[in-house]
Image (cartoon, rainbow, N blue to C red; front, side):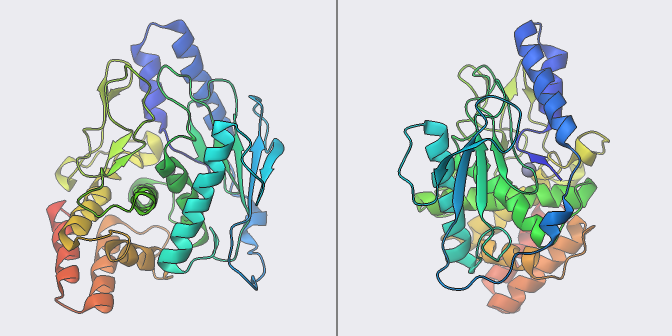
Length: 343
Ligand SMILES: [Zn+2]
């Protein structure tokens, strides 16, 4: 499975709306690359690496595609090597490190697969490539075209989002379609945002709850790719169109595009997490994040889990961790009610 941070409908919208032939060509080319990769979940990665002994530490390798569309590219920075001076390379290295530390310190998870998986990122992928993705084995980043998007190595939550697709792949394996696909997307937004909050030391009420803040190029009317706090408000731009995310089940979008709206309806569970985290207070990764992490990785979810089943699992887990009727349990239940998902 290949999970891009920018969903196809955003780039399709650019094709429909703009007369700028260069921009159209770049959007079309990004879509062609994305479609050509949309295939694989390699068998090799299903073979978990052996148990790791000794210190738990990241094992990062950054590779440079040098603007070609070939993976993985040439190694430019290995674990422990000093900074290269290339902004994309060094940001990719740092964000892998923060993501590794977040999962290890917060939940005792040793890398993406829980067994010390080496982390590989390729930067400078393609020409003006407007996306970043996890391809089942590694991270890949475009530099953006500078008109719609800036470099995808910029925002830390883009890396956090994509690597969390790896965590989901190795744990609940949520099917990338319909409600389970929207939950898969939401897991990546939840932990992507938490990784940013962890890095900045923010509490739930201090966080911006945006995904990809800083990714929209200058002149694009918007603040980010998505808003967990107020889904549907991240952008409204002549070229990109309007953020299509619903914030409540009353506005659930039925569509065949975007794998059944996985980047669209994820607004509903995203806002549920935001509501729970803000109501509980403090560092969101410590309690609300812990509940979601336990549900995602605990082995109790079917791959086709829907919103209602997931919501019930989070409420049950909050009750188990913090007590039946505890403030945390109540906050989680109320959060789902608040987005129209009844448990
Ligand atoms: Zn994603």
